[in-house]
Length: 213
Image (cartoon, rainbow, N blue to C red; front, side, top):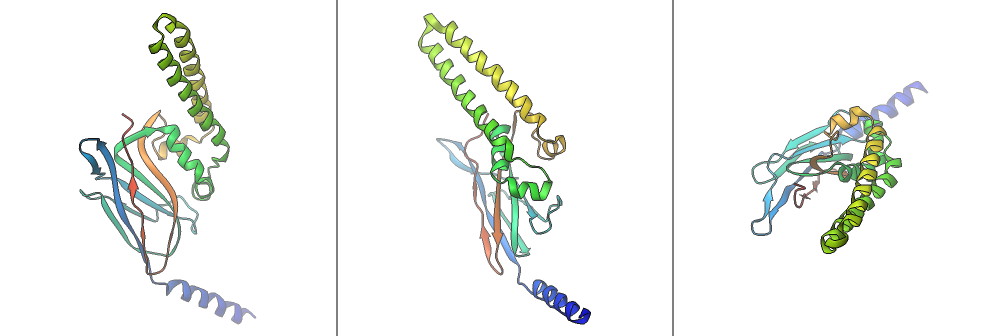
């Protein structure tokens, strides 16, 4: 029985090792302005984490060239959590956290951090920001009653700060430091799960759009 089991394991290992590797390639860019249009996000970092391994070590990584192109060869077929960090654009941390939340199962597998519960908080924060924008717009349009609208603006602003504080307290500091999420603004990131197939190239192009500031 032991011989049969050992033979079966050996066959499985041989099959896994005999798989022809795949690759991942693409282009990362952002919108410079309406006149210039898109520019390559040179220096953007691409990191791949194997969902099969389930540990925090980067399995594959690359940096985009001056044209924003990258290619990672000899990738073992399988599922990966891919995190691309922009070199030239920024975003609100809560927008970045929403991406991590949308891939919470993979994030939990790799980093042991459960972000499923932060979804409602992130949505309520976005709603408060919209209310702030509306209150400020109303204040500008109604100068004579601007104080009323500005009072609402600062009320929403205080609520937003309180929610952001509680949100940060719910996320492990180690995770925030790892991805530079301790502040309110950070380099834009694209977080997603991809599947690399045997002997195939997985195309993954990233449009980071306009920068936050």
